[in-house]
Length: 426
Image (cartoon, rainbow, N blue to C red; front, side, top):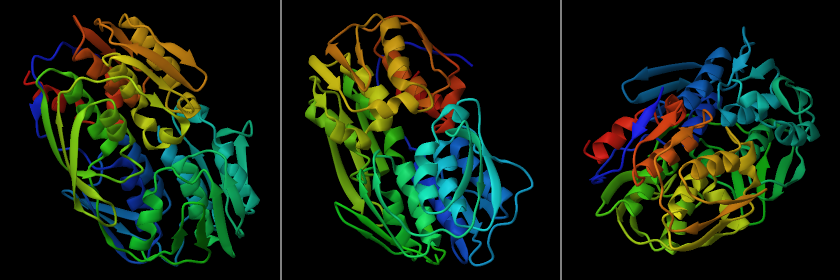
């Protein structure tokens, strides 16, 4: 499917943003592991989240829906059933990596697989710490899916995370819940912390400090009600658009304002953007309102320490950097190379197609602005973040911008293009 984008004459509104993808995954998984029935409200209706639900159903978890309410009958002490088929994770790295941890310490054998993109993404980074716990994995070429997990007794470890990845961290935490002893995680633990916040909500125990996480083994979780706030990574595209389209105004409610997720907002404020926020709910996740108005942007540096809090928004930041005055440089973002696409190369190819210059590094990029964007044929590489970022570019470009394979936005934001039309009043 192609989408043709033209320059926006106006941009304003109060869009309802879909539920947070990361919290939706975790709500399903923690609800599935708990005793009792968990009710999740406003879960994200996207392909990635449906992949997690599909895998859990294949393992015998009963999941039912009534309007925007999802009910999960947790396994408690009864355990998963042996799956009749491979667990198809679709395009979802979160599903595959977190399920590796979920299954590692449980008496079950299962094969995890995914689509053509997911089977190219590295999985050894997850199997390695879980194997140190005693888990049994067989990976394709020792790094990729399809992969088989043969669950069983595992033990606690003291492990230093080398990569700031919430997926790896969560996989280890999930394994630690079933391990003998107390698992200690140190190193790069500063990635998004939804799992750490949600575990106590489900009766779990985790000790969190700036330097370590401690997770006791043998824990039992208890069902609870969970409201899913709106996804800040999804809201980011409209925040970016409102920052660069003349005379734009934007208001959004019920957005997750988790400190580990608002890196783009903080970066844009440093760039001079007019963004204000107000927290209306504090636990288990800070949630609130965001207000945005157009403002001139200036270039900034994004160091490695800031990357985890805006990793998903970096393709959008590259687009915004073309409209900012001065130099914007991002370093320490080599993780972009192993996302749904090589996002550094995808960004560079498409920015050059739109007539702009970008310098590429192995771990980031540099853009000197402002530069004039010209409508172009944009390759999404079947990557939802690339398709959405360059749709925003099309709103300030001369001429027509055509996004190829635009249906990939359904991975995280099925109604993206309908919302875009509403905000641009087209």
